[in-house]
Length: 32
Image (cartoon, rainbow, N blue to C red; front, top):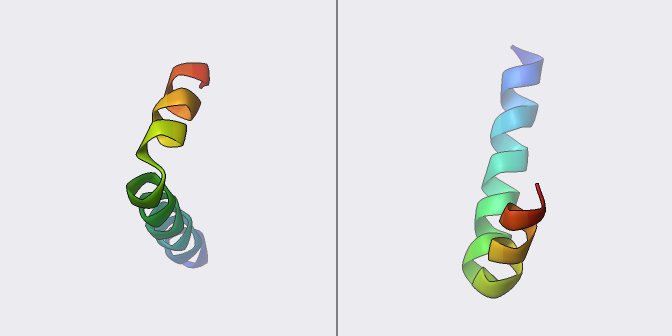
């Protein structure tokens, strides 16, 4: 349960970053 909450928080933060810096998120996506 705790893991799921942490995962949701990480995804939420990642989503915000991806929206504000779409170009960077695309570069990160290619590297991963």
